[in-house]
Length: 289
Image (cartoon, rainbow, N blue to C red; front, side, top):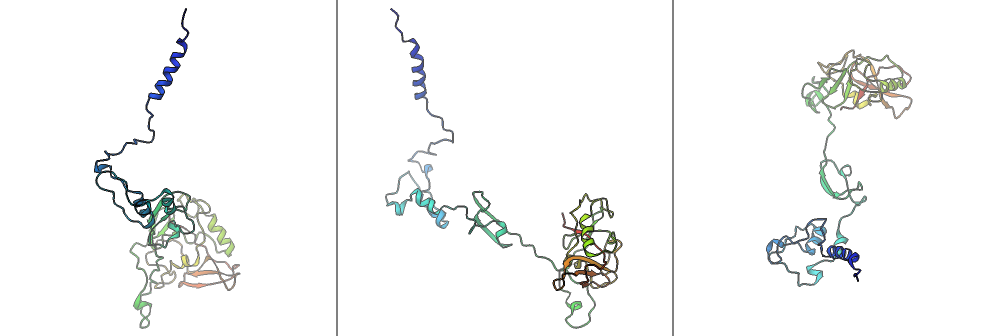
């Protein structure tokens, strides 16, 4: 009579084999870097980790063979709860990112952009340069002609980009080379004309699109003025074309009369605030790239 056991032998062998097969570590070796009697197995203690998080102490790996501290935990070790209590976390109130820190200051902090990890860097302080007025003639002791205060500009100040635009090396602004592309118009029309400008118009070949250009604010427009010259009040050797010795609109409204806007008159560089319905010229600008 045959014995009926052949069908159960194979499953039992498979189970036994599986139990005897050592598990595979999927996160790296769990072995100690060296024998516990070897100094190469030295590690930081939990107290070192706690102190690093709490006060920034560097900590020192133990020397010699491995051995736990014999002092009480409060002195020689720390629980995981204690370590977590001082571990950094995302803090949008006290934490900081680059834009939160004063320019020029080196800082480190916990990120506030929903990403984990310490973030460090140095803010870049870029002062807004005030150019010399251009006046060199002396009219009185201590006047502008004597002191000539302001940022001196390394020549060439204006760079012709060969595409209908001029870059001002002092401010980084890009100006339309043709300073008389538009007829004299009211303020609202000047705003529209500047914002509608694009490559293919006014001698432009810069791949700009509508919305790239705008009417300059009054300080930007006045930054072009050279008070040592007149009609037009622009630096000697400037590369602009068709500059008019006349008033150009800025995008800045006069605070004391909101029906008026500020202009820069390039006869002598004076600034005025005529009514917005008056017709003046427009000189578009865009941010440098």
